[in-house]
Amino acid sequence: MDGNVSDKVLSDVHVFTPHETLPDTDGSVNRVTRFYFGLPSDVCRELSADTVSDTSDPNDDGELLFDDDGDVLVTRKPVTENKQVITIEHMMETQLDDVGLQVWQGCLLLCDFVLHLHKEFKGSKVLDLGAGVGLTSIVAGLFAECVLVTDVGETVLSASERNITLNKPLLGEDSTFRVKELHWLKFSGPKLSCSDMRGCRFKMTEDDHRLLNNVSLILAAEVIYDPDLTDAFFSMATQVMSRPPAKTLYMTLEKRLVFTVADLDVVSPAYEHFREMIQELSGLCVDGVTFHCCQIHCDFPQYFTYDRHKHLELWQISSTMAE
Ligand SMILES: C[S@@+](CC[C@H](N)C(=O)[O-])C[C@H]1O[C@@H](n2cnc3c(N)ncnc32)[C@H](O)[C@@H]1O
Image (cartoon, rainbow, N blue to C red; front, side, top):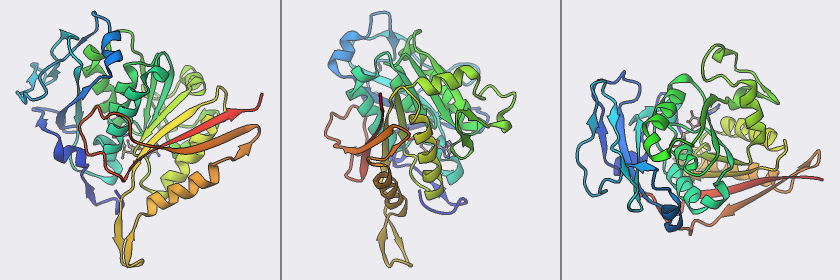
């Protein structure tokens, strides 16, 4: 994802996953992909009989059905097997500014990890940073009490809101989501200044601020691709994580290699910058808050379909507070 803002980028996820074109959309989000995934066997048993979902055969790439307004129809059947599907509306190739409208490989890795760690997520309050079209949030919402789904700009926030609605049959009535703007570059401590969101339904309310403070788990998939954004991300994340209760951030990224004439070599500047930030943060203690960072081995089961290659990484950053 390195490159000029005018360059177009396309996620590998969309190259290898079947997608369908939505008819008659407003042009902002124009593809639909069905992401099939397995459930850990204990989760399958736990999902109550009144939870409903689409249990279509993953090998059946039958056509999507649409209602008169062009909305995707999600079929409703009781959970009878552990194959599930999440339907996501998204874009294909986008400019760098709109990468949130695509789904990235690290998102699927993080979804796998949430499924693997579902007991930790059960009943928790979760913050998703740079949530894009909302896939990780939706998976977290299968277990969490509440998910604060955040990103920047109305287009991507509307897309995640729409995808959450689309997957309500899988999520059940109890799941709670709040879709809100949290702009890393405008984050200024306990209060957020999002003046350009004034009057907009995505603007954080006092109650959203309270939830932001109270989350215990934070997710961030594929938010490392630009050094300035990485600095803003770490500045914001460490401020949020400095407020009790102690918090754990799980983040995924893909180490993207590029050849540069300046280096006459294959390098990964975004990744190297990330590692510098991790090194600075590891063991850092500020005002009684200590940060711990470690890489998590990706040897847990794979529930989604994607290429889990060696350059896809998962990191854990935790904050602990002095008594
Ligand atoms: C590569 S996308 C990842 C989207 C999604 N998490 C996934 O993995 O499919 C990076 C995300 O970070 C968001 N982002 C970029 N700059 C941001 C900022 N300053 N504040 C908040 N979110 C930002 C983008 O809008 C986008 O949704």
